[in-house]
Length: 94
Image 1 (tube, rainbow, N blue to C red):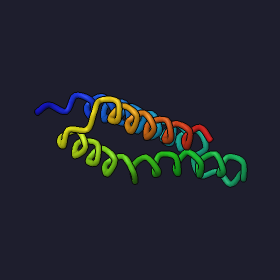
Image 2 (cartoon, rainbow, N blue to C red):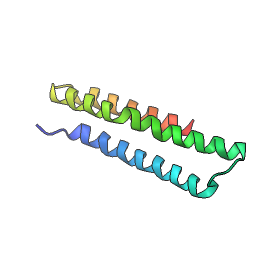
Image 3 (cartoon, rainbow, N blue to C red):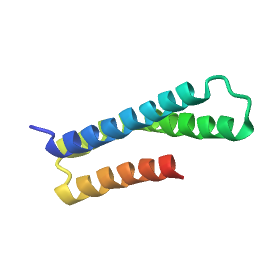
């Protein structure tokens, strides 16, 4: 059995993960060891957005694979994958 739907969301989540990692790296280069509170807050937000996806992506993708393997419908799979991706985007943006 192929896991085409899970592969789509895994790739999209991976792209978001890399984008968030790049954002953290960019801010680290920009601010270095800043003591400015606003700059430190920006770093904290970027680091938590990246950490949040790191903490949740693997388990979610495993659950998607299990659901797809047990015959979950395509609609359900796309709903769950989309909800996860959108929630991580909202977390990163907010």
